[in-house]
Image (tube, rainbow, N blue to C red; front, side, top):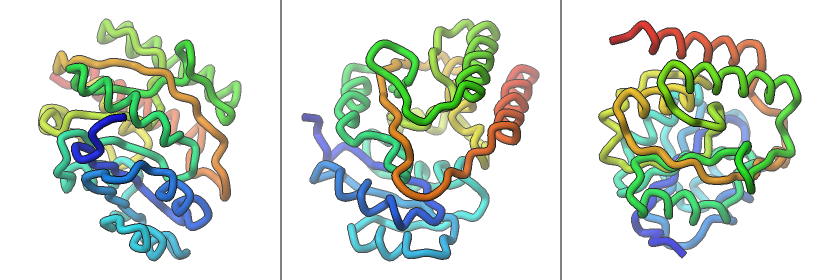
Amino acid sequence: MFDAKKVSLVIPTLNEEGNLGLVLKSLPLGLHEVIVVDGHSSDKTVPIAKKFGATVLFDEKGKGSALRKGMQMASGEIIIMMDADCSHLSTELTLLVSGIEAGYDICMGSRFIQGGGSEDITFIRKLGNKALVHLVNRLWRMNYSDLCYGYRALRRDIIPKLSLESDGFGIETEISIKAAKAHLSVLEVPSFEKLRFRGSGKLKVARDGAIVLKRILKELFRK
């Protein structure tokens, strides 16, 4: 088991009352802090977060902006990004933290290495992710297997080196590219993505795929 006192967990939310309680109930005891960054939900997401003792912040711009705000406020040595829809298994927290404790700057869950998998990804999303991963690997000489997956751990002291700016679903891609550009040490560990438990997801394949591609091109032509 990892030292939970080191860990700040950041969870972006928007109308996740059917899932958030289950996520928070599944977490190990003794985490340094749990920060829920809510997009002004119209349901009971915020009261549920407060019931479980989470710190609640608000951000209306999108997932990336919410995560950036949460990471800026986090005070633990290790920051973990986690989704609120029950797709990420809390049992994998140990693996993510272990990567950081082993000396890596960033430890990223991957659905596409041995031991990983997904109940949720469609053929089109899998194909798009593969093409975008290949492009990023070629441009920045990396060996990523997954690009658009949000279950990640980062050392808090490397956050300023990333200078993150994404407001939406491009945040994971931005982290991966900027980690490569800053020559940070990155480890991928297997992660299994479950189906969201209740409700519908916010990801839109065409829209968010275009956002990711735009982020790649922006980083390519940025010094």
